[in-house]
Length: 233
Image (cartoon, rainbow, N blue to C red; front, side, top):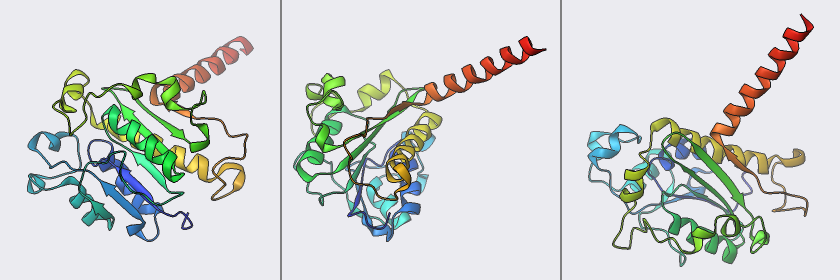
């Protein structure tokens, strides 16, 4: 994993603060991770984010950067952001416009994007390769609202608090989203036994995983085994 050019963590909030410890374990050196976030810690964040009362009023990005040895960019990420080519961008932002900007930057800099999100109880993550642009595997194709939804853009009049109010987040959902993003990274990095495969061998297919699907799949598997056991008895 040391051969990666750079990792970028976009968002130091509900998902990002749980993703940061995992990235700190796989990044060598630790400053090969750069964190973007222009937000400050507020009292309301303490119930589900990894900050303390002593952090209130301080930039979230600075706190995580200091805690894990990351480099820091305490500003909002947008489509004009400069990143190193062939890096991995982890988008943990809670607004759709930022996801669109991440995809735009990934296209320009030939980067992989791993995007995570969650509602109150469910979590999801998906991966994007630049060669998928415009195809059925492009998130902008199967989530077309990414191209038009400006709700929650920090630089606009509306703020992500609006979407959060409609779908209040929980610690468990935030943690699951972070775990799914890391899982996708390792699925890609270890594909076919290669630590760092090429961005795509032409046979790669998009992976989109949701936490409740894992739970349901596990339940159905157990139920099926139980029924077979009952019939055998």
